[in-house]
Length: 244
Picture 1 (tube, rainbow, N blue to C red):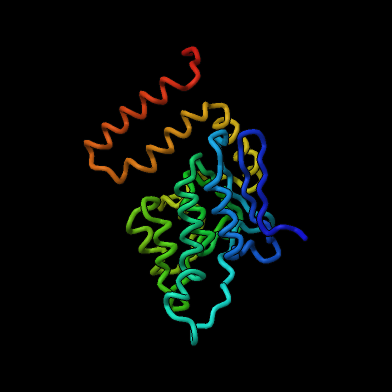
Picture 2 (picture 1 turned 180 degrees about the horizontal axis):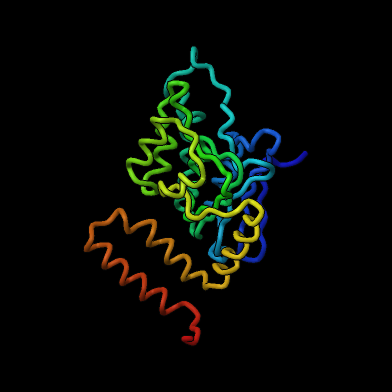
């Protein structure tokens, strides 16, 4: 039986591959928990984490967990409905190595959140993004948590209130993705960026990731001191290369 999520490690790069192409790569709770576990257990040798999907679409959302709203209490609903996706988003946000999403086709709901929560996102020019939960009178606060510190306030508000299907061009303008790529060139562009990153020292890449993760939560003076300390620590440990 084919696994719904694949993990492929090539040297110092981990590929997390959503592998339910016939279902639009809908993410189940089991997939979310497995991805969270793998990312939490990564060692320091991994320099880059890439998230992508097989088939025509990156991820068309989440497969609804089996719940009984008539008999389950709010506390019983919390884990299958809320805690699993939050664990997934947190694992991506807190991953030791930089994360790169490679998006084709549709990125809907959870898929949109995963595209946004990664440190960098390359998207095909014909990709589409949407947060449609309000169509079902669901407040998409879980997706909104993923968007925190990833997109501006007004971008998050517009996405969840309007439920509009956003083109990749609009998504780039709104800060949801990093760079637009012609569909036929997406794989090559992603590989070129990956190789550029993988040529750098793990300590340097992880130092940048640590600063991005923590500095925004600090007051300016603390962030300044942290930047100096982190810079000194990385500089003293990273391999030296001649200046060109």
